[in-house]
Image (tube, rainbow, N blue to C red):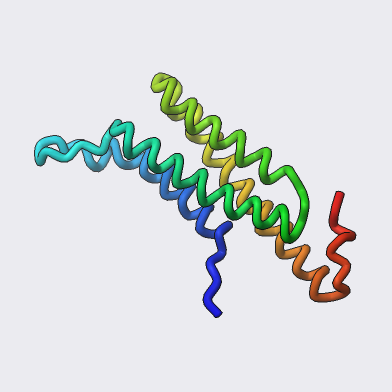
Length: 134
């Protein structure tokens, strides 16, 4: 059965967002010559943030409800998403908000993945999933 690892997808989306924000202005500055403008395109920027939010919420809530019941990944992810929205509001601090946002979001997905793996080991070993709560 094919299963999607949403934590891996969330990490990939976060890293793609970071690469987009860091490289796009350097590499694609010639696009307006061709009539294409995705640099500072608010629809694209907010669309990427909303995509990361949807994927992240699904992955983290699934891990929280079904496996580990730890809130720290949710807190880290929420802080990262807030910083991404602030990045769009305060352009002068773009890079200063982007870097910690990506670190927080990737950390949230990484912790969620680790916690889920530990919970699965407990489930498989002793069916004592409830021991992980707390």
